[in-house]
Amino acid sequence: MRREHRALSRIALGAGIEGIPRVLDFEESRLTRSWIEGAPMQIAKPRDSAYFRAALRLLRRLHAANVIHNDLAKETNWLVTPDGRPALVDFQLAMTLTRRGVLARSLGHDDLRHLLKHKRTYVPDHLTARELRILSRHSLVSRIWMASGKKVYLFVTRRILRWRDREGAGDRLP
Image 1 (cartoon, rainbow, N blue to C red):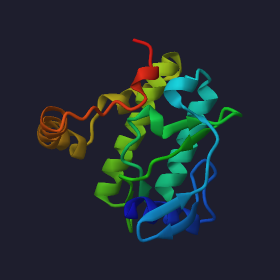
Image 2: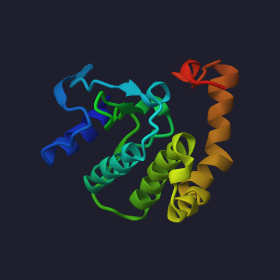
Image 3: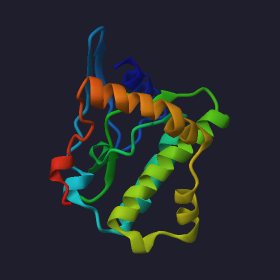
Image 4: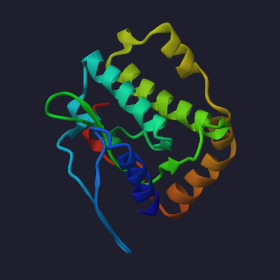
């Protein structure tokens, strides 16, 4: 909750970003955010490349505020508003950074790769050659996580705790 508050507060300092919730109230054990009308990506299934161009602009503005979302692989964190624009929710894993160093660029690259994976799912014919190159390159942080931390995470959450990290997946077609 504190990470989400810190990230959303950082974004608000720059007059906010349309498509990202605002903090309405924050207390010791409660964070109240503004509501953004929209459907999760896996339900709305955006088939217009304009959605993904706007999503890229939204992500660039987020990164310009030195906020990395860190959870954009989940389609449930991407909304499609009633007028077809993108919005982002669930900033619980977000990082706020003081400067755009190596870590920020690496994690920002992963945010971008996750957006492009979704674009590949919904409008694959609209991927550019540059976007295809980005999709083919995992950041160093991502490679380390996949080789070590993710295996431990999956073992603990799936085998020991029996969690299923597939929220919203029931809405997807096979």
